[in-house]
Amino acid sequence: MAVAESEQLSAEDLTALNSRFEQSTPEEVLAWVKERFGAKAIQMSSFGLEDVALFDMYWRVDPKARLTTLDTWRLPTETYTVIDQIRLRYKTDVEVYQPDPDAVGRMVAEHGFNLFYKGKDNRVICCHVRKVDPLERALASADAWVTGLRRDQGMERSKTAIVEWDQAHSNYKVNPLANWSFDQVRQYVEENSVPYNVLHDQGYPSIGCAPCTRAVEPGEDPRSGRWWWESDPDAKECGLHLVAPATR
Ligand code: SF4
Image (cartoon, rainbow, N blue to C red; front, top):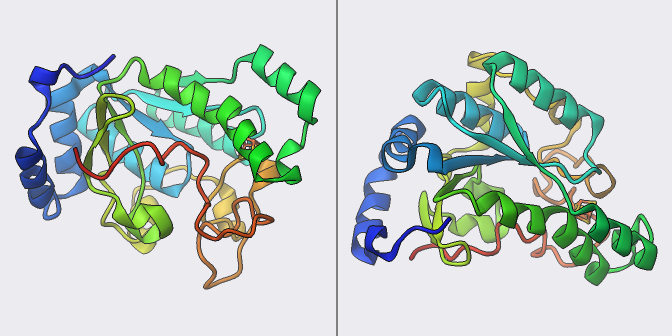
């Protein structure tokens, strides 16, 4: 699904909206999402701390909020556990998008199961098959996707706007927590008893696939535990969040 050109915000309106939302609460941003997009918006969640906090807010604003995830088939057991906990807590369906089994089979036959350790090119292939391609299918049903991106996660994320025109998918990407800190997120989760991934208590600020994520030391960059064997500190993304320019 793509947002019709006649329904797109002008660059001036998008700038004004973002200026207003910098002073708004995440719930106010989510109320705008509900009003403008309704069931054509999805939250894309990896069930990290930001994502579970955000869904709690979204569900309070819109009990019919759609919750979507990408199951790469390589996630930690703890992530599957929190998905089930969220499902039960909010009595909500989780829309799960998975890789194309044939594409995974071809990739594994050609490069091996743990191809990602054999160079960044292989890692990008794996992320494309297991994440980017399923994301494309998920976004085909959405005029907007809601994410838990925060600016102080660093690197490319430091440029995150609250509402972005996602040119690649012809839809809007909404990041209500863009100007929140990790401590604000953690406090929200604690105060609202939101189920969360227990790996966060074991030194994992950012959690992705099991073979590609490790704990970090206090004070280390929060995303340095992702693909830790790669030398480029600015390349800690899998492609999911590299497709959207900051503004229309
Ligand atoms: S994070 Fe690792 S296992 Fe997951 S899709 Fe990317 S390379 Fe593959």
